[in-house]
Length: 195
Image (cartoon, rainbow, N blue to C red; front, top):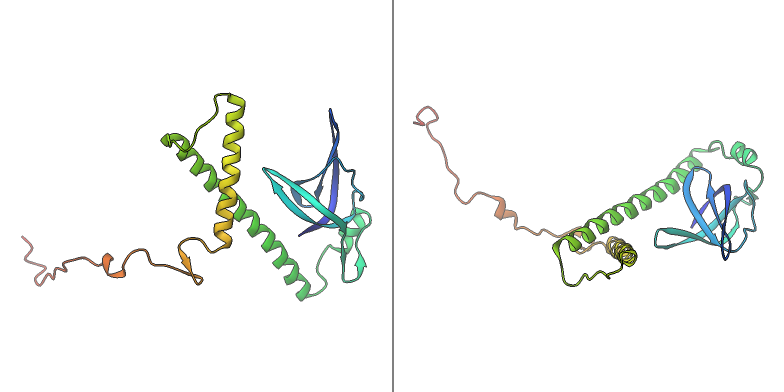
């Protein structure tokens, strides 16, 4: 669930119609709405669900955002004044926690995407027979992008499940602790006689 103040609505004309997207204050993500014109305006506070399709983030079920029984829609300056700072310590920590969760999820997504890009690069360079690219150059890009998306989602699912090397919330030891000990321990009795 995402929420915030609508900073800008971006209509873009295409041959088959106008597509809409918007950004939130302090957030550089473009939330896509498709061909449906928004029911809100710049400066309104909204809450919505997001879905990811490739590299695009879509906003679904966009509704006015109300907090503590008071609607926060209005001009950006009005909302900014009322939200300029937390009124209580509890509110500050609640807001910080929400921001931290959002930032952490973005870091996790970027990390998984970077890992997926590296995996696809290694697969393509190693000549693995399972990866067959089409002859057409334009389709190659599409196949590679789909592979990156697939592996990004796989890595995200793996993270949510705790990963393959995690059981019951604890990391499994892959190497026996005793294996790191040297097989023979030498004791030097006389440091002065080392010739």
